Length: 400
Image (cartoon, rainbow, N blue to C red; front, top):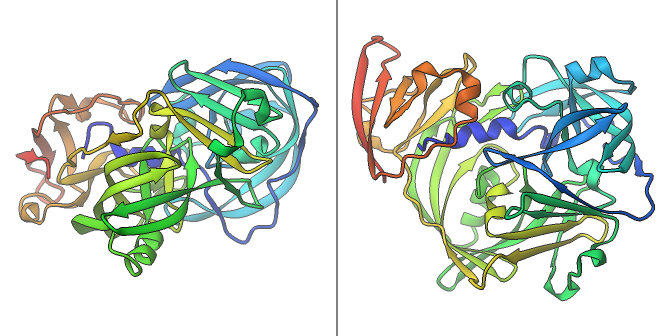
């Protein structure tokens, strides 16, 4: 557990996979033939918020390379769209529902005109990111698929251009990126290394997820059956995944340490990760802290330019022995107990009232989602309510 509540990050992962796909999101085009545009973005708890214009009005959108373009139901009621139909989709917690799909005649981002872009309509009251981050929609990779985008977190700046050559990048410094055929989600290669053992695979680059590296249960079991590259820190049953349609069912999850994770020519050492539901592993926006990131969707190339001369970065950070979850009642509760020695002291589903100096009891769910404070000490007091007896209890937690 940390005070940034890692699992609440998953609320921001909109639509990552399709079920019974009938509508291709890779439609539409860019009206501008040549373009090179710099723009500032707002960083809200690791989320990238930009301004867009629709029907001559300005709106705030989350820029999420791991998602498909989407709009809120409130915005849907205000703007002109063409209905494409509806589609059954599966959120990142594995829960399935159906959403309307529309085509937006024009979305303008800093004078760049994107035409006839398919977008999902998020049902009112289901996805708290629209309310809590005060956004009206999500810019996904299906809109970006004809462009090159560069993220520079030191300047809180994005560059959008029709050609990656405009950025002065060298092709020899790029790594291969794969883009899927349904919504242009970008996948980049990584290497997981432990001494002489090495595992390879592609992961989704997901700017809407503010974690560093999340490994799917599927990818973990595939890699673990082939090569010894993971150190298991803890294993238990529970849930720390919340998606578009609610809290995921309880599953077995593992907390793991990866000795070295390599992206291009940069090494990240002692990476802590946790297995999560689904088949897709992800590198999130935490990567942007360490260098400029560029995605050329058309040429399927990816650049990571570190901000300093260091080619090796230490990420080791100990984890707390429980994992919180925002339940369907918008309460912070215990989702997973990693430390088995706590099993008789705390229950899955116990309500978390206070952790360290952070008072969750007096926060609404939007304050919790936007929380950026972090407990840096090695131990902290947890105050919680037993779900069975309703008794208020205290427990001192030590990092594992």
